Amino acid sequence: MSYSQLSGLASGVVVSCLWITFVKNLWKDGSGLAFDDAGDPTAYFWVHLTLAVASFVLGTVVGAIGLRGVRALRRTS
Image (cartoon, rainbow, N blue to C red; front, side, top):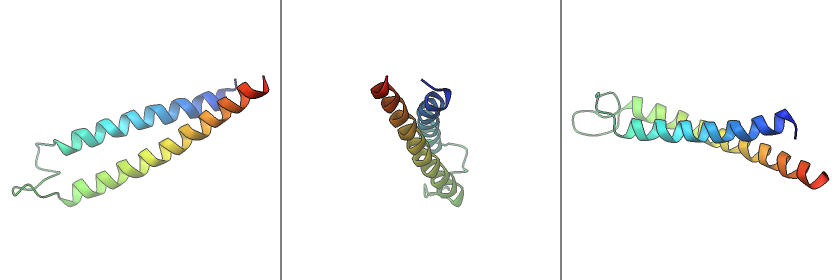
């Protein structure tokens, strides 16, 4: 099994866990950055949610590529 295949798979898992935790923390933010006094989302919330979703999607794609590489390597062994 090559290092690049394992690192792709591991990166996908780590990035997914990281951004899911980030969104949970963003959602329950009590500092006033993510939500205004009326409870409506601020620009800070929308920007960071967009970054988290984009990073999660890219991490999932990298993880899927790593998984395909690991599975292909096992088929040839």
